[in-house]
Image (cartoon, rainbow, N blue to C red; front, side, top):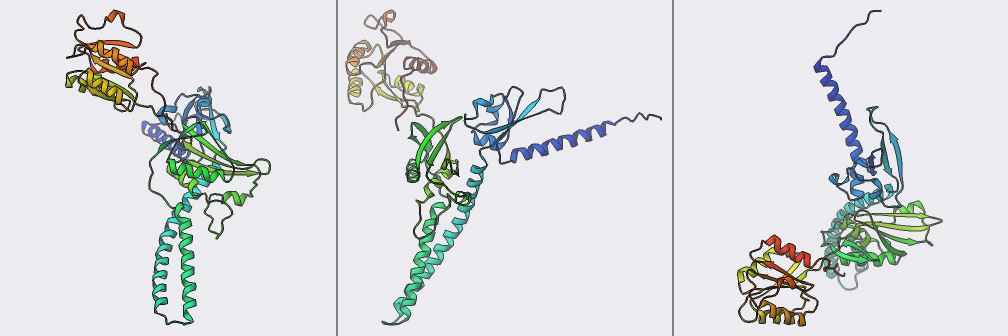
Length: 422
């Protein structure tokens, strides 16, 4: 049999590569849109890539995740499946596909409530308009009937039904989309949560009426709030409808509207699970809050207003509050009357009246424990001996840069700021 040596042209090779690339992008886009968290891991279980659901669930950006060990991202109690696969290149190291298993219920219930929210908004809008028309014309009709008319009872029934319609709309209203609220730093069960404070407290009160509520920090930057009631066992239909509005005249349980609003405002997720052995568990995933640092208070003393202005400019306003004084008398007055403790005194050495050294001695009696930073281009014979500065005291020679001043203050106050109490 003759062998034909058929060679591919460059155009045919290019076309084949284009088809392969299109196929790769097609499956990559499918993976990105799958509503289940999936990650591609190296042989040593480091993240090489992950879909949108994974990134959103674990609050991690694309530029942060590559090369991270998977155990640093997943909470300890996460259930997942790990499936080894081989790269198309047989010489390449094998890969692993990780699929998180414990989240589909969360996604489905949250998506279902989003649909309820959109429907509720339309129903509330139309119901309120209809109720207003019915009530207005009903009252007008009632007032126009003569005394003793048998039609009055009929009109009163219409008005009563109108009130019931308004009541149904009012029960649905909390489930409609709400304007964004300011996010606060809220402390619950020793965990910091980023959420509107009033709404968070209302949601926790609602959950507390249904079971025992606790919170734990989940990596990275997420809070898991769990409400457990081991005596309550629900069937699958009750679980699926757990967060839906109860429109009955006398609801059997407190409305979960505040819980839904909280999750919606925070961009979180929620789920409900129930079993005969564990009872009913409601889980909320909310963003954690970064600890807020209290501002440190600086008292800057210099007879030159320009120098005081530069000190304030050098110290970031989100971290420091700078009080200014032109001389020792003004500085001591502000130290005594300030509603905040002074953390550091920055004072010129050579000033009219009392010099910086004398000011520092009196200041330490008013604010014991505060740091003192002398600044000067010339200390003179009455200035502090730089070689014998005591602990908590520093010196910075003029002229200095704004960066050098900030670094010096930061060094002297290292570890002094504390997280604000909520």
